[in-house]
Image (cartoon, rainbow, N blue to C red):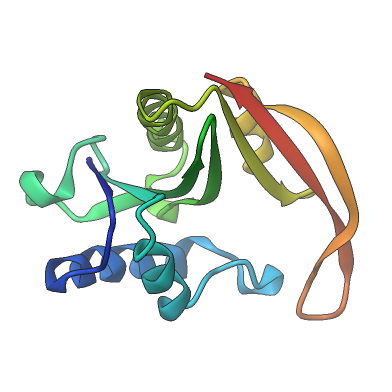
Length: 164
């Protein structure tokens, strides 16, 4: 897995962005309009407080394994806290423990950066909720009607926290 702070995307980081965009395109349901576009990912990675993890299907680093990336995490760090911005696993690699490996590595990295809590926000009906609860995230807040689907449907957001 690759885990680096990203002061400014260099040409080799374009490959990282390509991998993130490929996984996101496969993993995010367009109905919810949650996927970021390439510019958003690129811009996020220019900030030194933004970190990413890429993992292959075996939980290794695609940069050294020679395998395609199968999942990623994108986070933002502020003193004492980490925010999980995006996490995705390619559909053909789901239910194999990769999401849990990504979260555990992200939590370890966040702890090493001085975070004591990790936060995330998700739509209420997101099936990833079971994964978050399994690894210890607890609901700590709700934003009514926060998300809007392509058809105009509104749904609540839930904020989760995890002590690390």
